[in-house]
Length: 159
Ligand SMILES: Nc1ncnc2c1ncn2[C@@H]1O[C@H](COP(=O)(O)OP(=O)(O)OP(=O)(O)O)[C@@H](O)[C@H]1O
Ligand SMILES: [Mg+2]
Image (cartoon, rainbow, N blue to C red):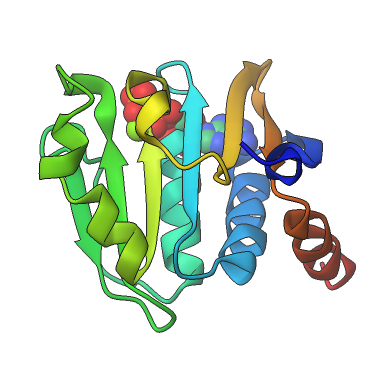
């Protein structure tokens, strides 16, 4: 793992779902082909809400259901194809191969809920987001390569 892969670190309070929506838009603006976004957190922490916000910011207008049972959902977006994973139900991390993670990252972006089920199989340069419930809101802790500092600062200036 390179030193840079964890150089960006930020804690963001998300007081309400609208704050989650705007974080999703900021992340969407910084995404490039090959990026993995890990969304960690307990049941109901807001992982799917954030994934949905990212997809909507990329122009997805169709429904974004939780991939709890399908394990993966594919989306075409104006920027790149995106696959949205929920690994809660995978039994063996090797299933990620069948679920096309490698192709997902070759062609576009992967958003991954319950990444702790397959951590060793995920790219070390991922943007890793841990969400926790805080009262009526949420807190997001972000870690990732240093380029995310600029991406997040850039976007927050306009909001
Ligand atoms: N910043 C926020 N403040 C308050 N509520 C929020 C916030 N973000 C999301 N929520 C709400 O929290 C709930 C989270 O549900 P969500 O399905 O996103 O959780 P999840 O982490 O994906 O759960 P699961 O582990 O079951 O997949 C939703 O009802 C959503 O509206
Ligand atoms: Mg979910």
